[in-house]
Image 1 (cartoon, rainbow, N blue to C red):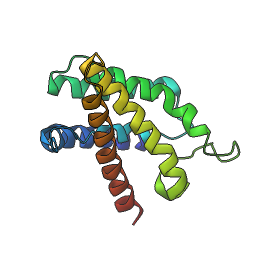
Image 2: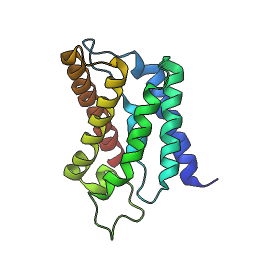
Image 3: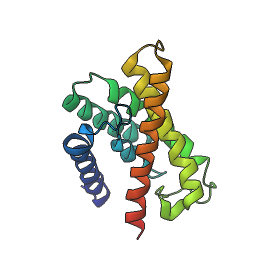
Image 4: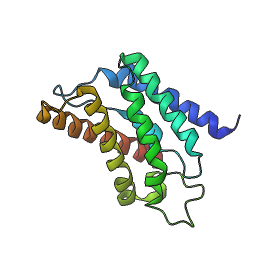
Length: 166
């Protein structure tokens, strides 16, 4: 087993435990939920096989679903995000530098990392809450949950990235 795989397993367990033990109990104003496990998919390097990113995304989503009794909700949303992430990452880096690039604040810089992470987190939250409500009857509540949860998740991701950078 390579060091990269061990690090990935460590991040998997760390983010899963953080979500289950601490973050899953936070519901700010009844609308904002921190969904930090999305960060697991955001940090996959560009050369990682796409099938492996999909499997890791599905495994993380299914693990979260098991703990929160949301059958398939996180798994579907995170697998969709894992399918898009490798292609979306290529938009921010020239082809000469894509080989072996780990997307982070350190490698991309503040602006490119914000353009990389914010839309992906927002897409995940749109999928997650659309599947959770499974209707657009109360669209204001859906929009509020989506935007507030995405904002809270992005703040947590940037906090983690800044602490890793320093």
